[in-house]
Each structure stands twice: as structure tokens, then as C-alpha cells.
Image (tube, rainbow, N blue to C red):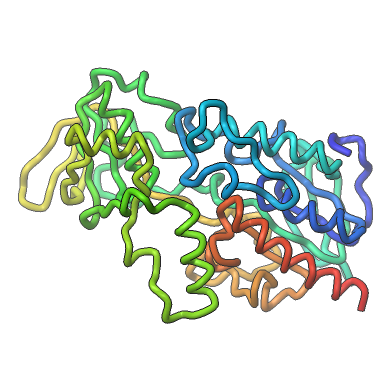
Length: 353
């Protein structure tokens, strides 16, 4: 059942977040016959993919980017799925398995409530024996501190607020960051604007034949064997088609990171300056965990210590889909499904003990 009509009350499991990780958990909870609810802050299905820039592409073919039980359809014309393809897939997935998603139900806080945890939302409070937090990272874009950020007179965007290249046409644009988002955004902005790419270290493209399939397999092997090669040893950026095209026209040349912003641009350590009209910070995200603050579980590094996905200091809480610290490649579609399977199996053992 989807919608705000399901009344708040007591459930065995409350899943916070209706994106890919939350739906994967819902799939296995439904199969296990659990009494559960999925609480989603969004107005519509699709999770963070609904807010991505239109040209964003996955790093893997559809058959390697699917949640459990339902293969993602191959896009018309082939190629890697777009953000819109993922939104359509997650919408269908939610409906196909009749997952009990309540939206909009932004979770404000999770608190101790005797033998249960109280999950407080704008749509009511659910009391759960187990809570799965699956809120991801998109809601917490990270921008590093650089002197002058408050005096720069141009536009400042982040991956999370970038919606396409047209608003930047004919501008001078600095793209910050050495990862996949930076490379994909630079690739398309460089077709309409004068771009400069700055990175902390020289970016490295993965071999053209390496995509998300190989990266997930590598992450899985490393989880089983810490001596296996790390992804970072191969490279930083998947060479999807737009990135390869940008490379061929010479647009992927990276400069060292600037040291500060000026009113009209950026300044480098050697004293040189560069004028620009806009800066795009492709500098990543942090886990969106503010709703768990009342439990006082976070450490100085910003994460919550876990054993697998279960919080060490609160055995009734699981964290799903935040990255490798909550499961190998768990922030990817296929990785979220594998982490969810193990998590739900552990939860059901607890509930039936």
C-alpha cells in the first residue's frame, strides 16, 4: 500500500527511506512475511535518482544494475540506463511488489521507546522493534571549506543542484572534483562553456572495458579477502561514452586544486588567478543521519560503528546503503540488494528468536 492512509502504530520493522536500499529491504521483508512499513520523505517514488541531472548515466548495463526479483529493462536503443530510466524502474518495482510505502513521511527523529524505537514523522509516529535506516547521502551534499567562498560573486553549484549545462552556456566554469560526477558534468558543460577542471590529485580513467560490473565484483572480492586489489588501484573514473568523447576532444585536462576563491574567480598556490563565472563542486556527499541524532551513536568521523549493517551500540538499528562501511558497494543498485538480503535474514532471526 502506497500513500499516507496507513495509520501510524506499532510494527516489527520500520524502514526509513524509499529509495533503492529501502525498496530492496522491503522486497526481502515482504518475502519473509514481516510486519513492516517504509517511510519516505519524497513526494513521489524514485529516491535520489529523481533529483539527478537529466544526462546522468549508470556505470553498468541494466542487467547489472537491478534490485532483487526484477530485472531493470534495457533502455530503448541500448546503452547504460539514465536517471529517468532508474526512476521509472523504482516506481514500477515499488508497485509490482505492493510495498507499504508511506509518503511524504519525512522522519524527524528516532528515539528510545522502551523495548521499541519511536520513529517520528510528519505523518505520525511508528513504534518499531527494528529500524532500518536507508536514507542514503544525497540529502547531505558536501562542499569543502576554502577561503573566499563567501566573497565569490559568481554562481556556486553542487552535484546535487546541477540540472544541466544550458544555464551555464558561454560562461567560464570551474569544475571541482576528481570522481565520476565531476567527469560526467565536465564532459557536457565543456560543450557549451569554457571549462577548467581542478582536482586534488591527477584523475585516472579506468580502462574503457571496465564498468560497474567489474567494480562491484572487485569490491565483493575485497570484502572477502582484504588483500585483493582495491578499486582505487585501477583508477577513479569510469569511461562512459560522454567521458570518452570529452577525452577525445581534449576536455579532460585537469589542473591542480586552487587554494582560495576571489570575488571574480579562484587563486592558486603559485600566485596565479583564474577568472570564472561559476564553480561546480563535485565533491561528494555525507551520510544523511540527522534523524538518528537522539540515539547519540555517531563518532567524530560522521559514521556509526556497525557490525555488518547493525549498529554496535544499538542492536535494534541497521544502516543500509550508505557505502562500503555498511556493505560492499551498498550505495549501488545491485550492491544494495545484496546487503539488504543479509540484513533482513539477520532481522528475521532476531524477530523469531
